[in-house]
Length: 498
Image (cartoon, rainbow, N blue to C red; front, side):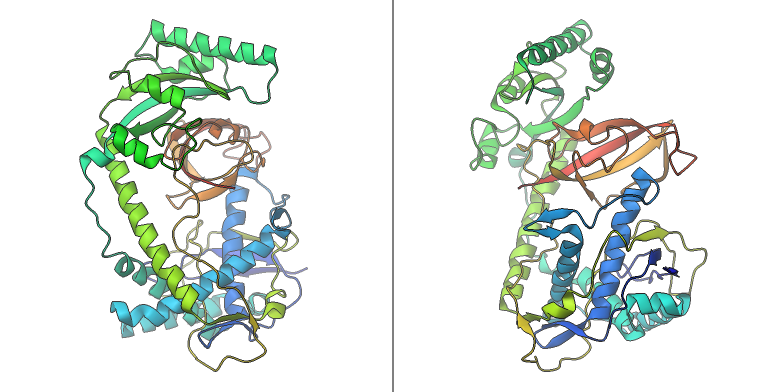
């Protein structure tokens, strides 16, 4: 195998492309000139899809490497669902994203979105810099041409500029009554799959935590919990202060597991009786957990402001989804399945992200370690659709997150969650320890993250902020982190419903 390196320029156009150097071991060469799909007659070459897929692959592997170190881990060969591997899913999803990119370009004129001459020059310069910065072997492995790179950047520019015009008409008025939030801290101790003796011990632990809080209601909740058992984590949450708004949120929820669209009914009943700073009088027992709670603020202005943003964001996502789904349904999309199958993402063909040593052009700005995932398609020509193209079902692709932000959901072992985090050692953030607000998916119980990081998220709800404490292994690849304790401020963005 040959080790190949490429450097991707970041064009000085917001949202166009952000990537680092890719290194990998090649497999069978691709024919990037083959058409992998057509969208309303516009051909998508395999080289474009290859570039998009490899960039997404590199981003995922960078995340794994930052937590696990080394490269001896399996991602892509693992079965995801419906008999397909994560690698196969990555290829199919990238193609669906590309199809949407083509449609967004088609619709751009309707929204007065355009590419200027300055944009075209910057894109052309960046594409040329990309080609010159890469070895012949690298370009051969990617099977991408300079024209395809230019279209890749062009389509990314259209994508970034189309989003806001599409959602421009969303109603951004949200009343205080609709959004008002109360905040609280709590410990949730799971009793699932435990023996009677173990459940009894868990209740005794919960009572010890409650006793500690009652002795010092303003004390450090986290320290009190960890003094009972170091594995117990204090979580923060919020709920709708207005019960009418809460009931509206929970219309479709199982009343035995959720109340007011938020937390278990038993928990909500206690919380609604408390005032600022008060501790729940008793250990709260549900079918699967014991809770100890302390109300923070009946009227939490920060949480209310966040809720307003969430409501508006939901409206925007719904409009964007509705609009783009309709366009996808109406489009004539055909996939060359035999060509698609030639692009494989496997654990034997890994890509990692590194920091480039130098800039490329005036228009090519910095190169980053944690790139955005980018998608692209070749929309420079509009040939007729060939009869050889296989018909495929029209996928429903959106830019909105597929995870649920319903706060009645609770993170459990085996769940896939989307999180953001900032890692710190001695209160100082360290390189590679943050998602930079881009969000990342994690399967709880997969062992992907170091120490017991994943276990500490169990019991959290979408919107919760969790302080996760872990210790890097003594033999961790990054020697400046090896053996050190780190604290991660984690936000649970959402949970993917099964």
